[in-house]
Image 1 (cartoon, one colour):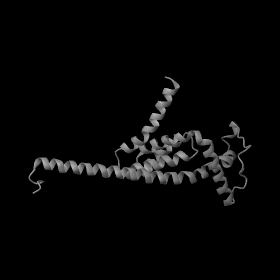
Image 2: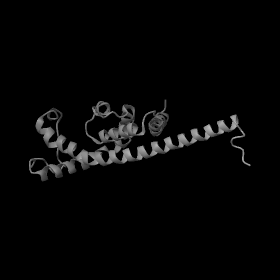
Image 3: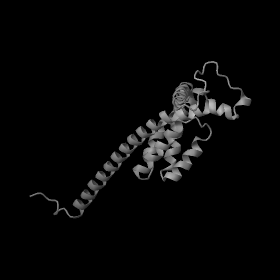
Image 4: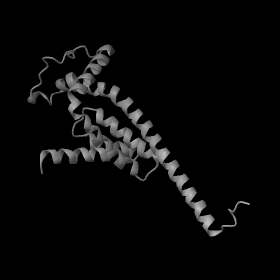
Length: 186
């Protein structure tokens, strides 16, 4: 398989994901809630845990877990922008934490901040880098989740309304075929 064929296949999968969400058979609120959870978790820097956390939150909140997993996977489209998003999340987190007054030791500049592999699992590294990322991600994740919930719910309710109208038309047409005298205009 050529690289261009592989790229087209991956791009086709990403393009099909919104259609898969809309095609799910569940209540619009449950599907929209799953999408919101997926988008929320997509913005967090919890790499490797996002899908598991989506499933857990979907179960706890009783929303559609498939929609949550599709949405968190769909969020991977922004992978090339992760360095920019992480920088924005870090800056927001540093701003919030330093203005609370409890975290004055957090480095405010990421330029020159080098973390070695051995230091990744130390608590000081988590407090200096991970905590600001996590706090900052909440300020991007919450609006993204709210917007995706509203948009998905609107699309699904419109689809449901159209399906009901179509069924009502079919019912009227089937009744007209059964008893043509009932619907005859004089």
